[in-house]
Length: 198
Image 1 (tube, rainbow, N blue to C red):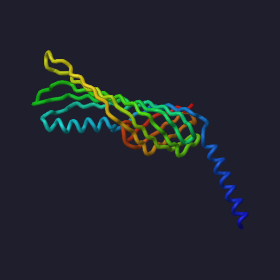
Image 2 (image 1 turned 90 degrees about the vertical axis):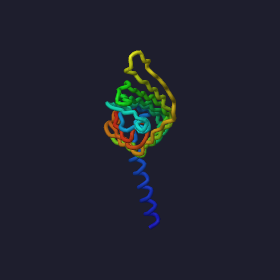
Image 3 (image 1 turned 180 degrees about the horizontal axis):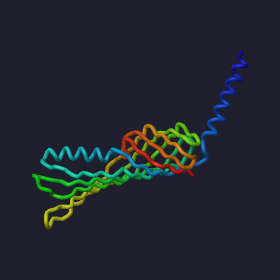
Image 4 (image 1 turned 120 degrees about the vertical axis):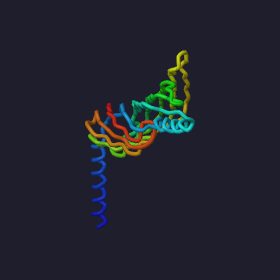
């Protein structure tokens, strides 16, 4: 009985190892482009608007672009990728005080974050993973005033930013895959993208 159990365990471990090896591809590098929804920067803008509205300001015609991101990972191990993420976002809106339009308010967000990616499942045509990144955002803001003779007011600041993608799902060929991610951070609470592995 013990011999049968031992042989069964060895056979099961061998089959699992072969299956795991067949599931991994040999690529070490991957690059991706993504577009997300509800980034940290958008939440910051919303909080600022709430604060300034209490002092009589009003915002209209708000348009947010992004976050549009590019990322690169090098797989030091089949399950571990290390790399970085660059994200860009832009918010524009008209600002009014006392019922008069003061001008156009523009925020640009440039974010750079070192990152790690954990591949929980890495098959030839499908994968599941999580991702964590921490870095900094350069935020520039400017007001193009409508008042004749007024100068454009420009400011910039740097703050800490992050991304925690709790679940990523990717599918396609071994080299080119589409994917979706769900989490929180500067890439958004949900994002879609295309990844190239080589």
